[in-house]
Length: 117
Image (cartoon, rainbow, N blue to C red; front, side, top):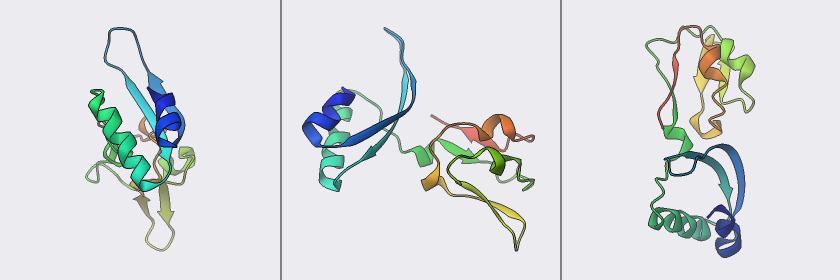
């Protein structure tokens, strides 16, 4: 299935995480890049196969009521999706940079980072 994204839709893919077991529902996190038209066709192909497609920005969220802006999460984030604003001392979460590596989840002492996929 994934190789067809490259073969038929000229998309480049990077498997970021895979939990796949026979006869069970799994989880596959892919980074996809290519022309927008081909990207949309590739996503439609996956949906026709019964794959639930979800943007990574919907997967990891920050519970702002729990976050105290301590900054522990910043040290483990490999993509700088979590950044400290030095002027306000607030941690900002840039969902578009998040690759759902989940390193922030155990790092946060207040469990302000949550996964929803």
